[in-house]
Length: 61
Image (cartoon, rainbow, N blue to C red; front, side, top):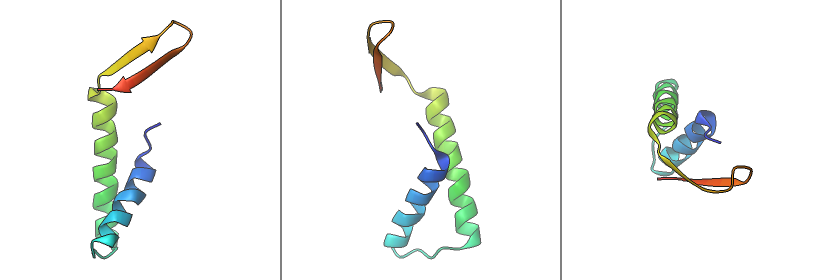
């Protein structure tokens, strides 16, 4: 499941590791970016499925 809130936390954590400071403005920007990334993937991703009608698995291409 794609989760914008979890992605937001992961981005903030990685930025902190690089020395960026957490601020209200940074968090708002990260939230917007995370939502845009998730929306883009959900809207534009192509998925290749395999299996039967009752048992399928898929991979995002």
